[in-house]
Length: 182
Image 1 (cartoon, rainbow, N blue to C red):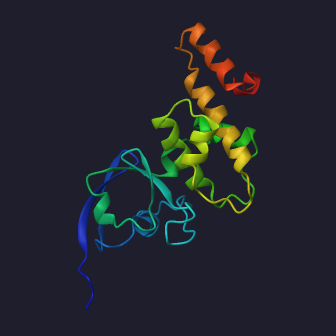
Image 2: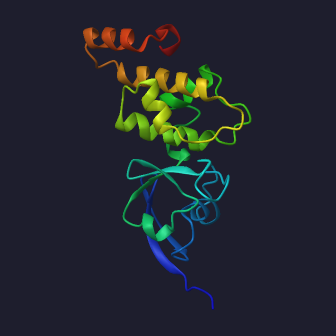
Image 3: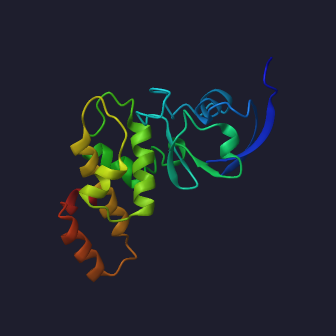
């Protein structure tokens, strides 16, 4: 017997959209197949690799195992919400500067996990990054990912509105070359 479809209202990338789907359908497939937001990738299907990572109420979650019914009433953010080609997010800029992407398949999930990390911890240590970034990169760019997150944290943390004394201490604490960040 076929499961009846249900109609949901989902808050995706700051827009409320109606969705008709099986309540048990993984959020990944609703995003990709129903809403045509294909930036979120399928990797393993068992929440191990992180290619499908999105933010749900600000937390990084693996969308391949999360039923769409569990996302109702929550704020969903996909890679499409992070930035644009004309106005990239600090993480996207840092990813380019640090030459993080190799094959690129894991990158949208990595960026969303990094975005959740920086929202919760604007000045993460290497240990914080290692603990939060559980996504798998087959190309092994973990050192570059760490450097890019530190670079993005510096850019986000040292906004133009920050007092000069705080900015100087942040730069010194992060030990990053600020010439490329600016």
